[in-house]
Image (cartoon, rainbow, N blue to C red; front, side, top):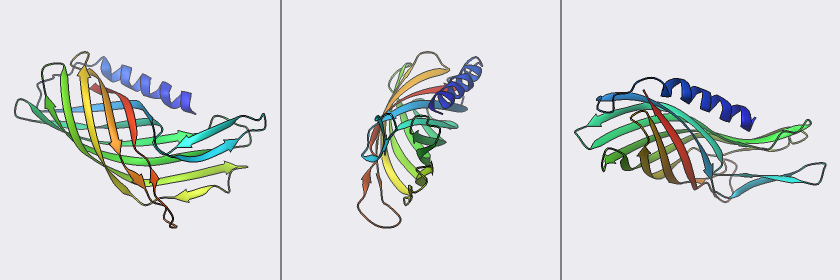
Length: 193
């Protein structure tokens, strides 16, 4: 599953990366993909060969799309909606997956033609830990949550940028109990068109 998602994201990005994007346009669209790392352990799954796989509250694939609006020469406002997922490696008798739908709003300040710094907020909708097959007893839903984002972005070209971001957030189980730290660092790639 992880390889399929990554291949789809790279293919999508390559298709749009070939399109010309005007870096000075007042409105432009973007699509992005990235890897995220961090957060508390949600569950550790044991496999029949004795190996294990652990899902983290801040991991691991984040796909998103949205738009950006320039405000003056140095500031842009960016909004995206995405799909953030971490799942166990492939097994023929079941799997476990942590999914959520983040909506990000960022204000980005252009330091120069290559670098932007920003901060914003992330609203996370529908976070859920769900198992299938032999792991179908795993089913935990979390309350929607809000977190803070800080980011730095470097443009390789007017269309392609790499972004390093930190998101601070916590997930609270709907059934009660202690909060789970979902804070993470992400290495993202953005394609502007």
